[in-house]
Length: 133
Image 1 (cartoon, helix red, strand yellow):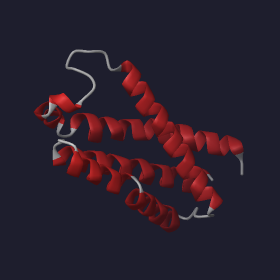
Image 2: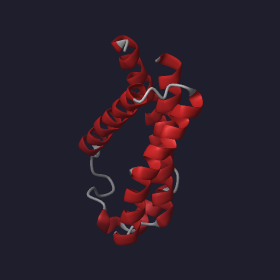
Image 3: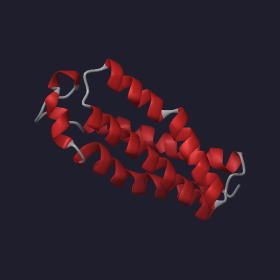
Image 4: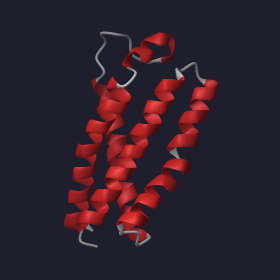
């Protein structure tokens, strides 16, 4: 593997998916977060920098791991990488978020938007992996 291409793919995936995270997890259905304020760690008006940093760091890890998985399994065609993105999404974030919606007092539309955000992250990473690796 060309590690410079890998690092560039991770960087581009993280940057692009930060925009989709902002859209799906920050803007879309934003008012639904206020429907259950008691479940969120932060309160309106409090600084969120440390939580945003941890979330971003986990986003870096997920993009890096997914791109490495594409390379490791040699799924570097568009069809194969997108299929892998859907499989990973179905195996990980989707059931986890849906389970959280079932057990935590969280609006279902937030589960939908968060799930779509994770799918977008994997699709973006797949496209960039195919392009650069």
